[in-house]
Length: 554
Image 1 (tube, rainbow, N blue to C red):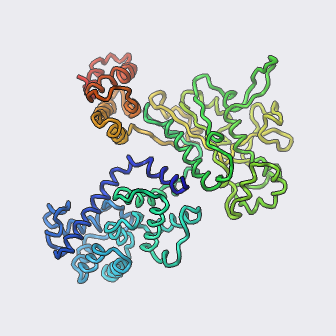
Image 2: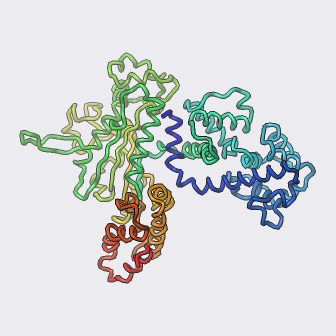
Image 3: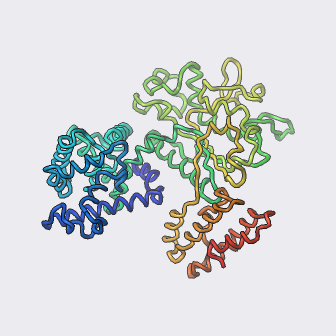
């Protein structure tokens, strides 16, 4: 896949179930406008009821007013939010009744092109006595799928510059970047050409939404917080999401920087599961017996992956320990090329554009920590909490076993002392089931070093999956939703005890069975024992029976 296709997979393909509501609202309004257009072409006027036949506005007392309200006034019209751009009711009425409004409105509905767009914008500014580009752009976006839903021009331009700078799309000509409308047409055409999707209304809307999701991705990029905890009820796919995120982030890096390297995802992604006896010695470094029966220092999984991820920073620090890696460009490091060229892993670095930042070119390394809350975290992390906050060589520390390190086990030696640091290109993705231990059990010093992302049971995702797997079993999603609603409302349980959609994902049953028969099998095989454990010692057998009824088991 091209790197644009990888980004599309990350932001759209893997998120379609979350976008379904927006997709439906978007398609509904676009369809309404298309029906209005057809009636206008037949000769009706914009204020006639007949113009709104076969639209959702047909039942309104005044369909024209209802349409204009959704097009220009509502906080969200199905296409985009109005953001901070607001028009008062009085000014909206004045605009609707102004001479010439009908003509410019009909023009963008019938022919949403540059000329009608500019005329509508000019009319708005002259009539309203000010600019509301978000509302103007949002109105046009409801009339055509040849523009994106990113109607805020500042945000649109941020994304456009990012896409061009990172090589996701070609550089537009001056004419193609004339204004918001022409830039949109250029971007949409670039996306359609490069993504090669089937030309359907749904895919056209997804392409439009893709642009906005890129803005969201840029505003909160993965690299802003390099320690993430995905928490929630069991069976919600937290570990799956962590693996998926790691692989896709690596694919994005590979397509942009590492196309000519032999680095693969398996080289940069590792996984470990914490448990009550897991320790600092397992995680970072500790004494282990060798084959001769002697105790020697051995590195743990965390230090090993940090050593792999940090070799570029170590090389730079060995040249000059005062250099701030985050500020270096490829051009800055070129003067050290002769000193570094003997190491194969630097070869692709010197092939990059000299203006690129070195830290961006380094491959991302990931450690997935499954069940992070099952270990004594203060004991496991020890002094590493400092390194998690202060990345790079400048955040180096002496570990508890620093004096036992050798050239083989050490990460870096500075001033005659073996020291450790967490590299800039290293990421931690952790998972935890809140039912096992409360989120609040993390001490505040450790908790503030992580970004917390709740992963809840996703009924819409399950429903979509069941529709494809066996449409006759789709009602199982409704059963799970009712069960979780009952669990969440129960004072003895609550949200943390909800059942994840993964419990109903891989159903190894004969597909000829009815939904009720499968419900009983799932209950007997998976859910009853789990809920019995949750309710153990409460003396509430009546609650167990009530939950069974919620799941459709009488």
